[in-house]
Amino acid sequence: MLDRIVEVINSCRTFLVTSHVRLDGDALGSELALYHVLRGMGKKVVVYNQDETPENYRFLPGSEVIVNNLEFASDFDAVFVLDCSKIVRVGNEAARIASIKEMINIDHHISNGVFCDISLIDTEASSTGEILYRLIEKMGVDLTADIAINLYAAILTDTGSFRYSNTGKDTFAIAGKLMEQGADPRWIAERIYETKPLAKIKLLAKVLATLELDWDGKIGSMKVTQQMLEDVGALPEYTEGFVDFPRSIEGVEVAVLYSETFENNFKISLRSKGKISVERVASKFGGGGHFNASACMIEGDIDTVKSSIVASIINQQ
Image 1 (cartoon, rainbow, N blue to C red):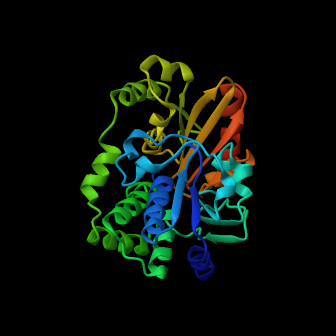
Image 2 (cartoon, rainbow, N blue to C red; image 1 turned 60 degrees about the horizontal axis):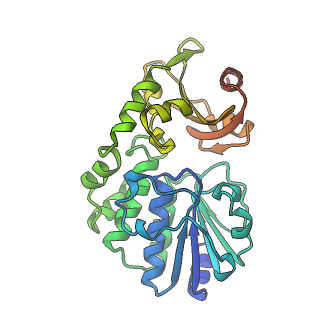
């Protein structure tokens, strides 16, 4: 499949690069790394995301070129859909994006439904950034500092700073090579994790107060409401990483964050430490992701939603 993707890159002139809604570091780092690769080859490239770039990722080289409006999908010879298990996850423009003649999907989610003919899926990879590194290596493209920084950010964030079980020896080897080409681990980590707006900390204080334990302390959960966001002037993106707080509690095997998107509608973020597959839980509600990290959307009041999620987690046993 690597050869087929290289063939498409060499034969096409104009590219669209996109990823899923509610952007994370892997999505953005992968998009921008590929942008620099293609631009370096003299290609015309547009990076489109439905959602705006979160503040803590705007330092990534090239982030200023990202657009949030897609005018003419028919203008592109090919589209790269990165870190996306389903085409609908790109958002409202999914249908128009799917109409582009050549579609290439690069992803590492076990829930990937293989929605196009050219699909490079590796569920053992730590991140889409890691898979993209292999493609760049195959192409023989020089790793510039801009590419290295973006790929390192992609890998760093999707491995939970190299703490999650998806981190393998190849992950560390690639990270080392990216460091040699200009990715400064301290600087990147500081920009992503240690440059937080005050509203995020105020929001966290409110969210921590909602902490609850179920199933004899094996499930830890918190909730975020629209009222909380309004009270402190926070954006929905500020909740990134909140689910790791209940996950860090001794004895907790599964952590859940219930984020209210609008009345009676919740985004569910799931994390597990051990043998429980939260991907199975998320897939029951139309979501997906990884064995230890997944998400889904559910309609209903918070009590009903929570009861459904808790029951589904327990039934994994």
